[in-house]
Length: 169
Image 1 (cartoon, helix red, strand yellow):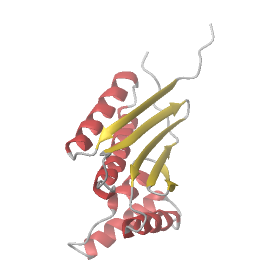
Image 2 (spheres, rainbow, N blue to C red):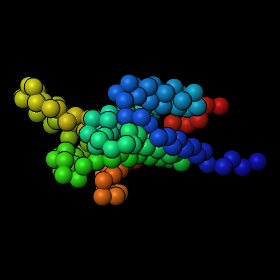
Image 3 (spheres, rainbow, N blue to C red):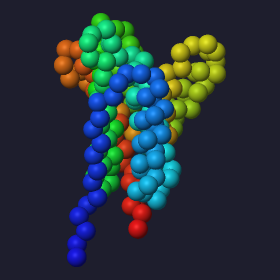
Image 4 (cartoon, rainbow, N blue to C red):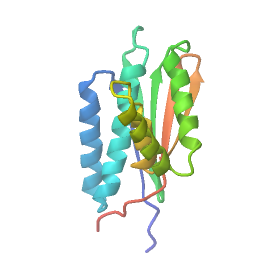
């Protein structure tokens, strides 16, 4: 009997309330711990999910009728992709800050080097907005990050993780 490669998919519309950040982080973590034996990998998926969801709630454009964003988590043998799509105001300077942060991370030889540089920056400038979340995703979550406007007023942030926690037997 041959085994098919393990695949999974989560696709949820989520209400943009702050309480949902922790609910989703905990739910994703619990879901993956129930299936996989690599608890560290499960924690990394949950942390990346939490950071991207927090950014959607914090920086999304919530003045219209729709107060939801979309969370997608897909896995195939060898990779996990976490995507968050939320409405945005294209004139919001946070979009440029997001793009600048992703470019900044890519300038380093490794995610660890970017993480260490961000921690030093935070320590040297107390009280500033840290911007640590995306750098944590890159380093602690072993993620490759990208962001794209998918419509005139919607943003998709994607974290691709290339580790794989083996399924429990």
